[in-house]
Image (tube, rainbow, N blue to C red; front, side, top):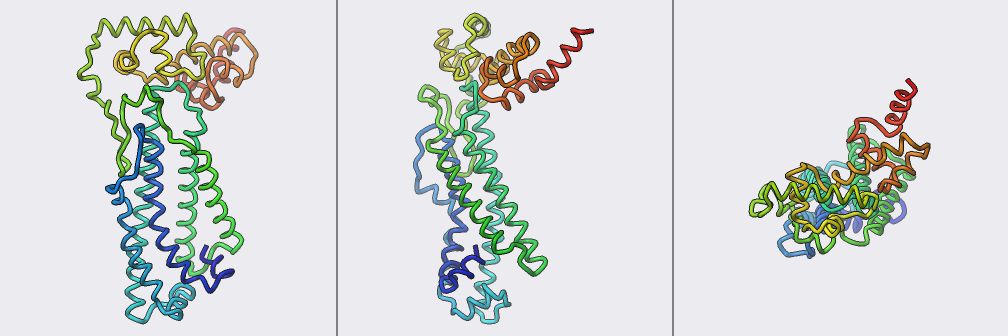
Length: 348
């Protein structure tokens, strides 16, 4: 963007550097709070305590004020010609900017780790309540994070290479293209995310995801069943109930099957169902349902010539990719390989 402003709006370049430097330190904490907001189970509001996430913004605003009062000739020498500063004020400004940019790079790495971890843990959390995660709301957040990671790595690499070689690597057209890609990614994926990744109301009591530092706190952790009255004998009866319901009613064929729907079909509370699946069977609700779907798909693969996609949709999956992933997890091979292997054995 520097080259763009210098080329098309040279008289506004100093104002741009002031505004741009401040906005640089808004990006990371804003991303962390955004991801926190859409992955919080309970209602989420911005509190004054969360302003700690913008810790680097305050010294950045001070440095931006220094840039604003910098004489135009010194600003041109420092920001356009990249000359070494000679005046004391320019030296102080250059050192302050260098220190803040170094801290910003550390914050970028921290932000990427935090939001990636939060999305992964949230993904694992909702597997206790949903049988399908092929939801565009879930993917929008993941794609936004992935796009930002790619762009950040690309920009950091180009910046490092430019400083190492002492010349600009990107042409004006490539800078325009990179800026447009960044703006498009943020705008498009933000528009896709019209709502928070909120669990249905019946699940909200099951746990909370919160923490401005990206730590995901699940109230139902290792101690979540400590006070439960569910015994071993009752757990076995619940296992029999859910297996009968899955077999007799073929509930797994419903792509929108949830823990709540299974609870209604079996007459068992969602909390007891969740506890039984986790402690007795050692699986999440998501994996339990997918096991039934995979078993059903095996007979379809061997008895019909339908495509893998059609079979995946028939047994309750919403996408071919999720079917492949679940099938390989259960059998150690792809559906196509499973079909070929068993067809060859039959011929022999």
